Length: 226
Image (cartoon, rainbow, N blue to C red; front, side, top):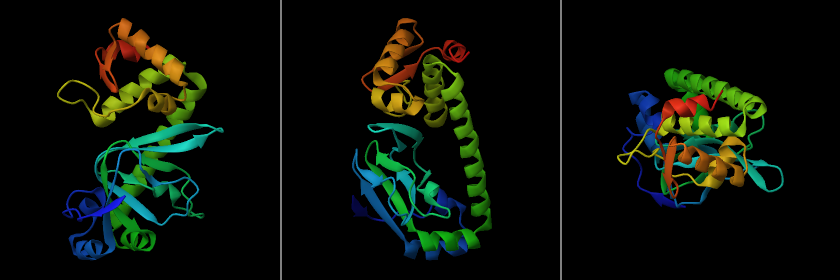
């Protein structure tokens, strides 16, 4: 991690959501850091020191699952908030966050973030709606883990990633993701994720090259959810 010049006060979700009159205070109380690929932003069970806002790059938010496995809760991209799951009665991060590529973040310490919420009512409301949306998505994922086949979960995961990050000029889902990370995202093993992707490729539903994945037939992928 290294400190970097601050953002332009217009790029991250917090800057966009704050009152203009609050931006000078935000400017004084923020810090901008860069993390290299594979570097931890924060670790599960660490005390919460503040909240992170992604300016550039992508990161995964993940949690321990058993002795040697992890479950990826979500993937985050530019404009997203990270670290908010540690807010509450016990200010301990219940998850970890790791950079998937070089990322730039704005860091706001906890006390100033709480002051920001009290002053910026519209941002506080938007954050509440974000929490509600995350809860709904978490409930869907729990249902999928309990009732959906592994093939269906992988299909759902690919469609969610495409919906969230879109596609690049080459037609690939605009996030570079390893087979291990895909498996951790859908609650599968590496071997099953690899085999299922190969099956989808043989059926001309997806194509992949290295860590790049392209969905060729959304309708057929949707049929795998049934």
